[in-house]
Length: 140
Ligand SMILES: [Zn+2]
Image 1 (tube, rainbow, N blue to C red):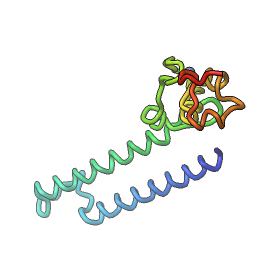
Image 2: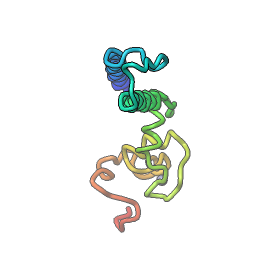
Image 3: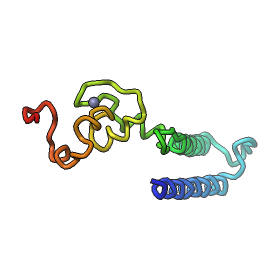
């Protein structure tokens, strides 16, 4: 898990470097026009394009901020974005809606909450992973 986060950090700084490079390129292409607006070589079309690129960059930066906004997920950190986007909050096994982030680990890995993990999966991962569920008629 630590390795994964380290890798995440590296990928993130790469992305930031790329954004810095794009910003520099925009500046070189358009000059320091944002505040000065030298009318001679500045027109609506240029301004439109410029604003478009600035906007794209701002969106990218926001996406990165969201990605790096980590949430403590019961012992290790997960990004808020990942949690809200990719984590199911309702256990498909017991139908309980969970707000406990500790459940996310089990939800992501076993598609059930912690309670169900303890009750049905712990020590019997193989049976679980082959598709066995407590309500599919093969109850033991
Ligand atoms: Zn459950």
